[in-house]
Image 1: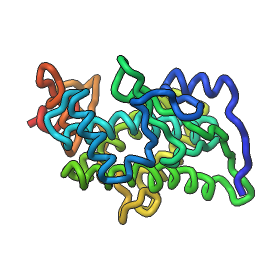
Image 2: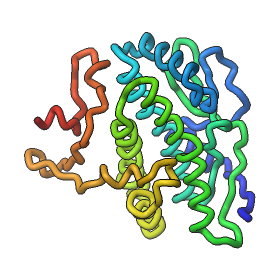
Image 3: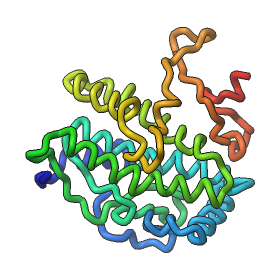
Image 4: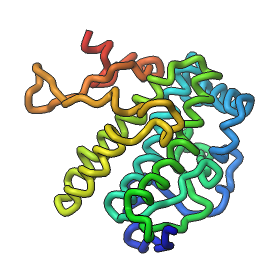
Length: 253
């Protein structure tokens, strides 16, 4: 059984600074929504239609893609950072996550956790604990949201999962990659998550991240390698200048 180990004030400060994560009860805003509610097709459709207006976005598909990009940063990034750097796990099940968008601010500013208790590996060992932490985040939260949004927005799951993959790669290769003393554990966690974890951990038949991994490269800019995406996230659809992402496959072509 996993043990309880609360995050220190310094750790919470880092998570708030880097990822905007907060610990509190339900945010006091009419624009806030519990992630669990978005698993309902009707509620999810209404939420995406509201995003169409706020972004603004021409279709639900575009709104769904931008949402998953943002939500992955606000959920997957802090959970994985906490797991690898602090060796602690947070409850990122959908029922514990509130998506907050205060009036007059961004459409999705931060995520807050109703239950902010943290766990550390118990007698079963770190591998079993790690699987539990990851399955709660993906199979019980992000993975289910992706399934629903893919269906109601008519957007391929591959696009939404690559949005998650991009966040995961960036987190481990850039922010965590700069922490030298975490190198071995970070490498092991990254390899497991991207290449070894079974699809069931994500709520899928196969690991949905592995197919998007490749070594960064950019012949035209050798000093600034990029990992070109396999799918387009539709960012250019909401950009005021119709601008493509630097790693967009459409830009490359």
